[in-house]
Image 1 (tube, rainbow, N blue to C red):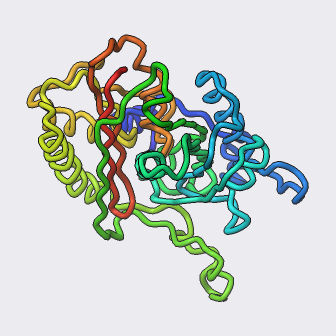
Image 2 (cartoon, one colour):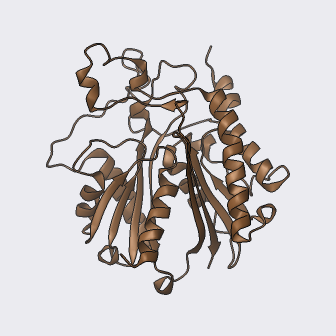
Length: 320
């Protein structure tokens, strides 16, 4: 049977935050209760993203009007359209353009890469990239293998031109990779209403073959990190810190060993999933946010995410 001991051993998760607890722990519901809002109200995901964005803008120290684009990168969007990003853009008073993107748990690194490309090309001077994740909304709480995995959260990152930045971090290099796999899947979508027998199928929520994912993803991500580091002239053994996707402590430990060539210390391989659980695209950003204050200029670290697709993204950064 499922138990706290089983959950901690299997994943490393000890707690999580959810947008609504009462519905999840009600045996008659076993799902979050999130009342629908009117079209005139700020939607739930947008509200989360705006809150995170305002904190990021305050830390940045410049007005939102100097941002030229908004990317909303997350595993599950509240609706197909209008884009969540445009709603967030409007709420923050940001000019320019905005769009949504979904690469599951890799959405943040894909979003950072996309933002960096827009800035590098001269399209805009600064980009806001947000990751609102209500992962509990797509979780099957009757599935023993996955009911405990996810938490809810929102994160935000600002990417700007090098010549206007003060402090912060240099992006040394970004790389993206995808390989098709059905081992992590969510079949929920608007076409479900056309299947009279399919509305309540379990695959309309999060499903995964966890053991197969572990065997496939660990070598894929480890090799990608090492190869990308070599291309950039970075010795992976000398990385000060890795902020990996927070999916599973055993997976993160093994990737850390393969990249560093030894057992990583807790300071080198940051784990926050014990407190937050798997927060999909936001996990590596939370880890970065919580554990970077001790860096001095010139020190290097890695933000990396991986997930359904399969998909993976690496972002090597250096403290300015």
